[in-house]
Length: 237
Image (tube, rainbow, N blue to C red):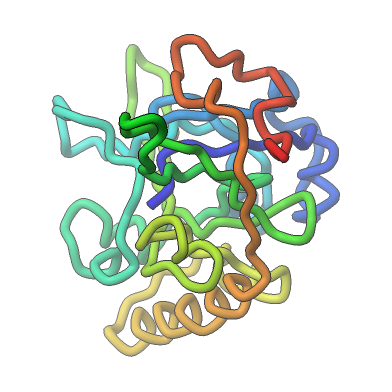
């Protein structure tokens, strides 16, 4: 799964990477410890004045559609196996797909040190500075203003990711950004299955390029770790 990640690129870097329009989410600053409910940049496309517009915009990492009044806990990961059929996710999968950019994400490995169990964090990342996680988005009104929220789609882990945890985000290569982000609604079971099969195929290829290294345990606590501290993702050795 993915319960914490880092995104250290500026807005201009994201605009260039995803060929998006400018002047979006300019208040974004790199963060090295992003937790559920935090605000993150997402990439999505919407129809505007007869054109399809791709933007970088803020979203809460806590999927909260308008039909759910009070959530008991954050909903931040959607399983690939059920994202097209489960009531919470299926409408967004059909018509409101997005990308959640990240530098990499953290997983924790239990181990025994001096007779005590500790949780050793690993930073899991790709060969480049941006990984594109497949996500879904929704929006609801709060005090008259629209709030966008998102969840990251996960799958069974492969390669280096699987050495630490049994789940990982579904990562996309750049040649499928357009197909994934298109706001055209998936209406038929065949269209939905085609998209699921695409995610399975391309994410397996990205997974083969994922590597991992241990980082300092100061990242373990969301209360004490400074999200703006770049040393959180530095290798321990």
